[in-house]
Image (cartoon, rainbow, N blue to C red; front, side, top):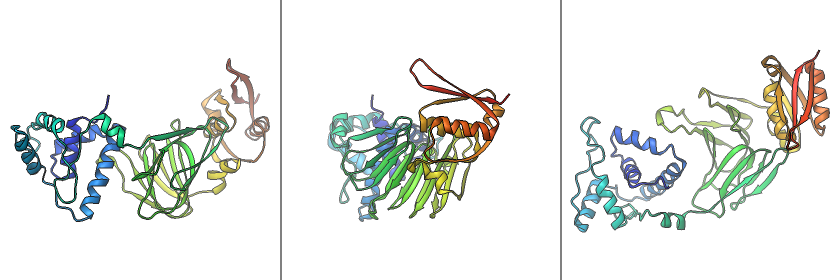
Length: 354
């Protein structure tokens, strides 16, 4: 069932018109936790902002609502005033009437008149929305993707990328996992990457994004150009200030604590995966195990937390799984054993050497 209810649409209009009360803003934030609502609001805001920049008149929701109500012969209660407090606002008294209006007519968004457009039926939305393509990679596999705008993406193992099937008004992709981006330059149409907890905006650049769902750390590493990163918390009060990176810098976010940091990075450690390099850069063996799982399609376990926390520095190129495990075991004074499960997936278990 679609989340794009008339109540939600009314709240969007109030917010974009800068007429919403505190209660209405809180209610809208609740809707925006849903991706469908968030995407819809972003598209609407982009069109709204474009009309403002083009010199269109300010949108008066009260006047527009009243005029349309009169034309349709519907008795509409007044909209809450912008300066009313939460204690004096009657929660959305106009929404029942709004449903009648939305069913009867479209409020058109236009720079020269009343700005709102809609018949918000699912059929209308589906007819205008661009279809999205989803590409996933299995463990041990990488994939190169060319987008309709000319941008190129290398998708790491165990990752998923979604993007519009055709060129559209926005250059937006969604990433789960890790990918390296080479974005085609287009100053008038920024490229946006949505990764869990982050929104990355660029014009034309090369950068790596790591956002695996089974890890708490997210990272954006800039090789060339400039990027702007925003935390995509639902509430404005939870969002940190936007961060702009220069080449050679990395932005990291701990989604469990909300803490962020900016520092330098090693190219081999961050984008070596594109060239079949496997680099462990002074990191716990438990973190290194995630890279092993993605690279070789195995499952890794540990006999105890102490073993999992051992630090490891290593650099591998074309070594096999057996060679990598042997070198790690020797360097960290560990024992390992491999047993396949019923599906044939190898399970590796590390334990202290006897």
